[in-house]
Length: 485
Image (cartoon, rainbow, N blue to C red; front, side):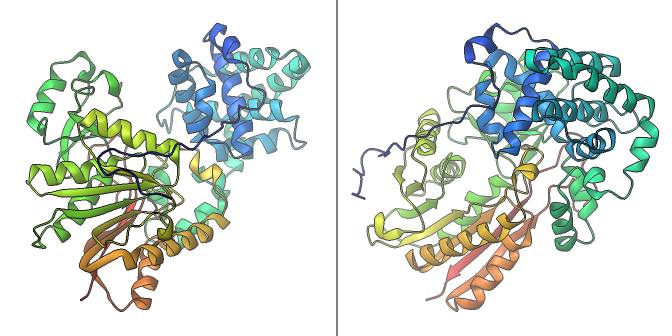
């Protein structure tokens, strides 16, 4: 690929198509649909069908009208966080699997009923049991060809309400139902974290706090907190400082409506992810040079770490040249948009980081940030569809991809420079095991102090994280490597 003009971010746009949800209505139909629970359950059931076909919520949500998306998402996430229970209950209530649409709707309704358990109430939409049952029946009737299934749906759900205690008791010993993760995922966490596996799985049942990273060039923690306190959105919301310039809010808020969003006062970034830029910049900024430091942000989209690198250096008057690289052209456009909002500039290249011959100009880098593709097993609180999208074979496949990226990028680090490797995963194959193997096979790689595995738990004692508890962060792994002279 030809090198882009260094004075203007160059983005080679890659056209991307999006597959519509199975059985989804047209946009025009969805816009005109009322926002009853029945209609929402129908859309949740459509998503469960799409999920089984490998579609994520991040993609599927755009088939839902904007005004309805938040409500459908709240129900969808509550359903996803109880999907293991719902699958097991559906089998107990209907051993012969019904047609896919009825199966998905019955599963969604059962999961939502489980989410209302008064003895163990995780976050989620609150509805009376009889309302969920009646609206599920109405939802199946919305599809004329499935209307005959309404009596079946009603009978199954009524039976669940009558026999709830016995049915839930029958799930004891079923790890998938108990922890609401696929059984292979449960076993993997057991192997990797034998002392904390239950706490890790339990933590994924709760939504994550909203964490902002304050742009030091335009605001400060105190200034941002004061501006938030002056708005109507902050009612019943706790705030505290996290990471270096982070502000953690105890609940989600409409980000684009917060003060300073358009002006670039802040970015949305988890506290664990906010450690990346300072770790790398502190390792390379001690190098004395008349030239600006040259940094590569590989796998950079959507640009949170790219912008943090630039903000961190500018706040300390460190000359910096950042190349942001990603294989997805559409996601590179998001990098450009984010940098523009924040008033920052970087050189953006669309290319495969594992193939430097296609994009590298031959000049070594003072530092490389490799936020490698991974299972995303550390961010399930934010994306509860992840466990149900992944397969056990994905770990080895992604670990191989991470290995290729490390091998391809390490030669591009100058002597004395550093590479920061990170993943948003709690699986050791994508973290400590990956780096131990790399260091063993590369004698010029020296491990520097780094956090290692960060678990998405409340505090150092690794107690389970209560709902939206301040101080929580995503699961992450960090390794910092210096290239010996």
